[in-house]
Amino acid sequence: QCDDFGAYYDVTVNCGSAAECRIECTEPYCFAVAEFNAQNSNQLMVEPVARYCFLYSTFNAPDFGNATFRRSSSATDTRQLRGITVNAGVDTTSILIDCTGTGTDGCK
Image 1: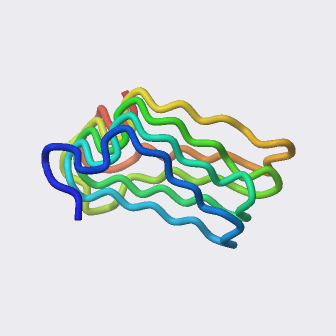
Image 2 (image 1 turned 120 degrees about the vertical axis):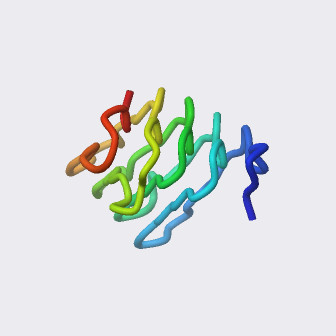
């Protein structure tokens, strides 16, 4: 359970060899300044809902797969993906960052 004080602040999350690594953030600052390693996964799916979910976090995309960052349709706040860094893998197929939805600052 993540709280408003960043319970998972400054952590490293390793997806291992999971076919799909799905990360959802529903509390503000939940994964601020975190690192997500999905190099050995086929698919990285990131769905931020709350403000500053992944503030200044780093995502290492799958080496031979896809990474998708999509604001939740239920997101009513903004700035969910502010300051993120996305690193492509060895042969990442695609990286999609979709900032559509309510609010105008979802990716700023």
